[in-house]
Amino acid sequence: MSRDMGVAAPGSSTSGLGVVAVGAALEAVAGVAAMQEEVAIRRDGPETDPDEPPKKRVRLPEGEAGKLEERLYSVLCCTVCLDLPKASVYQCTNGHLMCAGCFIHLLADSRLKEEQATCPNCRCEISKNLCCRNLAVEKAVSELPADCPFCLKQFPRSTLERHQKEECQDRVTLCKYKRIGCPWQGPFHELPAHEGECCHPNKTGAELMGVLGEMDQSHRRDMQLYNSIFGLLCYEKIGFTEVQFRPYRTDDFITRLYYETPRFTVLNQTWVLKARVNDSERNPNLSCKRTLSFQLLLKSKVNSPLECSFLLLKGPYDDVRIKPVIHHHAFSNDTNETEYVLLPISDSVECNKLLAAKNINLRLFIFQIQK
Ligand SMILES: [Zn+2]
Ligand SMILES: [Zn+2]
Ligand SMILES: [Zn+2]
Ligand SMILES: [Zn+2]
Image 1 (spheres, rainbow, N blue to C red):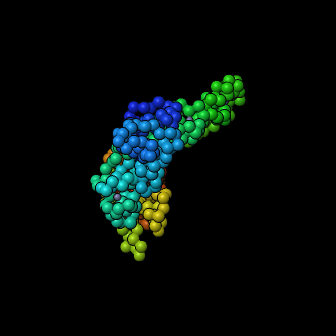
Image 2 (tube, rainbow, N blue to C red):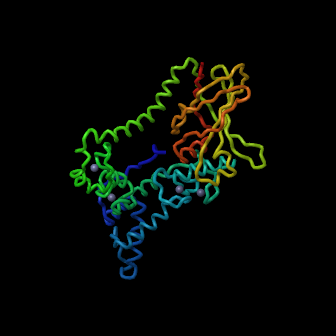
Image 3 (spheres, rainbow, N blue to C red):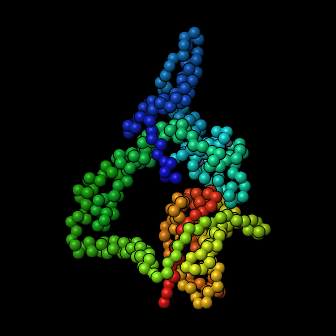
């Protein structure tokens, strides 16, 4: 999703724009300017001579500009969540707008319900092929003012991120001695005063040992995962393959969506992977939070137990963020399937991306533990 983010604002990106200047930025968008004129003309109504041509570009008093912005909010907002879109905007074939999050959510929902996805407004079919981006709306939204949560001043949406990160004098900042234990955090404009009197740079080596110990420990926890992966890479028997999860329906009274891969061979054994949504919750389409969990099944018969570590990662052709987690299982003819374990996808949005796609492509590694 982040790829689609950040539609550059045309021209005016000076920070600290007031409402009047924001109004001027809005005029850059042709349609908006036209609306503004219309408002101005109507307001001038009774006093103006009907024969006189309408005045061009009459600046609105601040109160009216506020109303115009409010009207634009309702024109440009996502028709599903009614929020102003933060990234890409999609539209159905009849022009109804959906923010990227809602669009992907609708597509994922339809897969869960095994229905064709439709526009909530006009019920026309929607899909990645049928819907297109609306760049004009994305740009117009990026020009609308938004409040900085720290200083509460207004900025065009397109410059807000930079303002919050780099320019806002009230943004939350940490002391540069945080690494050696200073817990201070406060508004940026108080930082120089704090750092001037911060006691941490004057601490002795002996006093800092405790903090360093804690840092070492969290570092060690991170390293453990990588070291165990490197450890596994030294095994004699390692196999990996691309796996493709395809959606299926159960024959239960209430049909449920689950995923299964075709049989595949790794380390001379036949395997299958299965996955389910929200651990087979009754109506995952009613829940906002979505997860996928999976299990690995050994389909071949084995003469002796087969102890394995396995790891599911993003495939070469799919764009999903998965944190590597190593699992272990001793496969035998009686214990030929693992428990369902969580696929560590970063969040529900990423999960919906997978659900919205036709198939889920991942890469599986199996490391055979030999004793
Ligand atoms: Zn939305
Ligand atoms: Zn529609
Ligand atoms: Zn600010
Ligand atoms: Zn400090």
